Image (cartoon, rainbow, N blue to C red; front, side):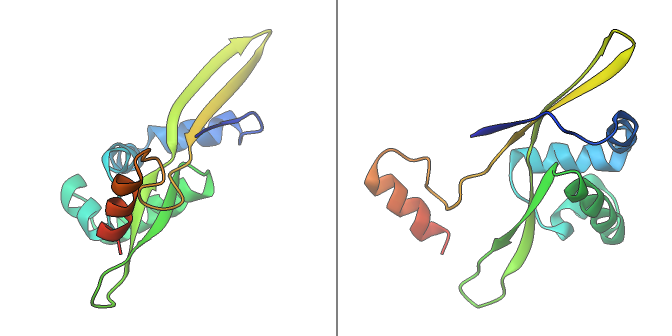
Length: 127
């Protein structure tokens, strides 16, 4: 599902956020698959505190979301997934206008599977 947002934060705030190399690296990595702070720190070559600061900033603008990764041993942990799918900036009649397109991840693993057996398999694998 794609969500279009017309009432977005100020242009400067979004441009500041997207101009940050660490924030862009986190968005790029989490657009492929949800990742933990440790995984992001390793892949993006930054400290975990830097990851958490940028993730907090990205969450503030709804560009990334936190999910819980459930483990069988009870050691659940947070992973982060990008929700930003497109950003555009236009200048018309003396005003800048931004458009942010966000995707909403499935509410449960396998939700988008059409086949019942595939849906059950995805759900079972993520328990």
